[in-house]
Image (tube, rainbow, N blue to C red):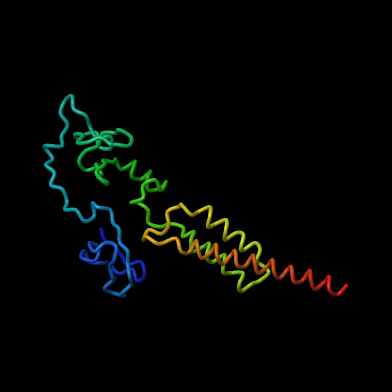
Length: 193
């Protein structure tokens, strides 16, 4: 099994994969944040086939009925053999629960992407600067997104909440300026009468 660079698709050497959060691709110098399944870097377990054979009265693996159960899944309770047991943060999981957690995003360590709501809020707040007719809906949407997704997990790489704060401040400034603009127009119309 190999890990590839997300920019140039070059196969990354083991020393780069072991570097973890802060690594550079040797081929294209792309900055990478690498989080791999722990079993990828672990040495292959030396399993004795005789120790895995099931004897009468012993529990068998849910996935391999001919193999002896070595552990039980902490989530669903299924018995699994040494090949199927997955250790994550000191908890044993079966392959089915790992797959369910990964597809349902219930296990943060298995996530590989997240929606960056703080960047979206900042983009929605700054867009009306270029296209002024969108000031009211853009400002209100930026404030809504910032408040609604404030507590959601951000990037996989830790970030501050400054984007949410900036989006709210920009949106409020735009709303105040829009209100002043409308007020000036109303005063101008009344002055002409």
